[in-house]
Length: 227
Image (cartoon, rainbow, N blue to C red):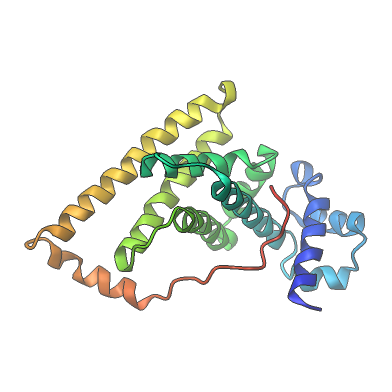
C-alpha cells in the first residue's frame, strides 16, 4: 500500500470519526465506530492508524493546519504589519475548526501524561506552519524562540476560545491581540540583545545548541480533509 493510499484511508476514517467524537471523545469506541462507518478493514485501519484514535486526533489537527495554510496562501495581506499577519493566522486556524467539541475532546486527550508529547508536537506544528507560511527566514535560536513563543500564544488562545461565548468570539480575538503584543515585545528585546556587543555573548550558548538541532522536515502526508 502506497503512502498516498494510506493518507486517503486515514482521511476516510477521520471523516467518519468526527460525528462520534463529541459523544465518545478520541477513544477506541470512536475509532471502532469510524472503521465500521467507513467500511475499512480493521487490519488496514490499524496499519494507517497504529495507535487508533490518538492518530486520528493528530490527523485532525494536522488537517486543520493544512486548511489554515491554504487560506493564508490565498489571503491578501499586502500592507499588513507582520504582527497583524500572525494574529490573522492564529484566528484563521481557529476559524477553520468546524466543531469546538472536537478540539475540546482533543485537549482532554492530550492533557493525559502519556499523550502530552503528542499535544506539544501538534501545537509546535501549528506555530511552525504559521511562521513558514508567512515567510520566516530566521535561523538558529531565532527560529526556535519564535515558534516557542507563538506556541504559548496559540495554546493560551485555544483554551480561552473554548470557553468563550461572546458574540462571534470577539473576546477571544481581543485576548489574542494582547498575547501577540507579548510575542512582538519578546522578539524586540531579543533583537536588542543580539545587537548589543556587551549582551550578545549571552546568546552564544543557546545559538550553538539550536544549531545542533535539525529542523523538522515539512510533512507531505497530511490528510486532505479541512477541519
